[in-house]
Image 1 (cartoon, rainbow, N blue to C red):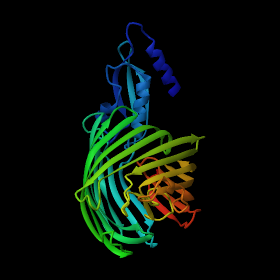
Image 2: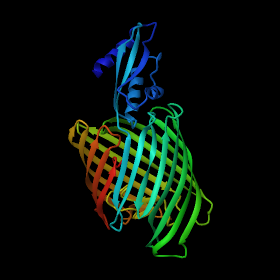
Image 3: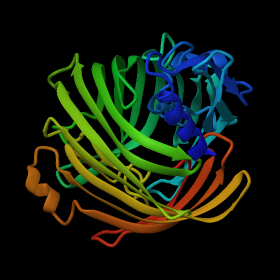
Image 4: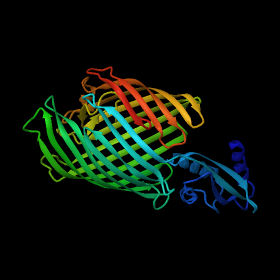
Length: 421
């Protein structure tokens, strides 16, 4: 069918020398909660525009990226007037009111969890609204709103509030202490979609950090109590050339995140820069295989501080390593895994995966030679399983077990909703 439609488009483009084939109307079918007006707003194809197969393919690719859409395809049929055509975008919607859950073990072999609820298609406009509650010794919560197409196909807005409290290890002088850490923040971001592959986010985050000593080693150079107000300037640039087919992904994606952080207490926590880039590559193998890789390169101002920005944590970068076992001012992390569909029928898919997570860090105040220090290198192979609902956005329940093969290695389970990356 798709080959026939493509041939029809090619034929239509050469029907006349004096008049190009045009679109009589764009029609949206199969949608329920999603508004047809929204689909038309973000589409390249409009009534009266040139009939362009490349523009149609780009629209379909964009639609399949949206949280509200499980699958999309198009059809083209001749209209009443000569050399004009009706274009139909056929939509298979996702269910978009989604609970989220992450469960993991702490370094004390206790369980921590995060439970949330999000609507990914608010008002049928692909707006996201929701929040989470977290129990990790202490209580935390957050609210998030994101509307990438609020004003047009190119301009949107995001607002986030977070009150996060955790017990954080602080590393200094080859010793460790535990602090109660609170971060309360409000963030505003302007969202700009330059074109199909490139987007930007610009914004401000005003937050308060509060460190309170609980137990462990002490030092005259490390405060036992610290409360500081900070302002964070944020820039995010994303290049996205991913193509989705239900649970399968193919293509390349790069996300660059740059932050400049200032504080009112420069003596204890000076201003610093931090940036990192995630390079993601996905490749299909046959009908059931999918190779996925993520390389993160991160660099921050190399302040000799126990409160370094990059952390080693099994919920972020190395599965099985434990929660926040080390910190650094630069990071290199590679996650690579092979995903294979073991069983699939209608709405359900069972996927297995084999992975290797590896990373190394620069110590606060150290040099780039720290990357080759055996004490900083972590390598964790492992196995996992995915239970996937194909018609509910991000409804992927994952279980991974990672075990270390380097010095001072640990092992453990990591649970969560959604793919690890």
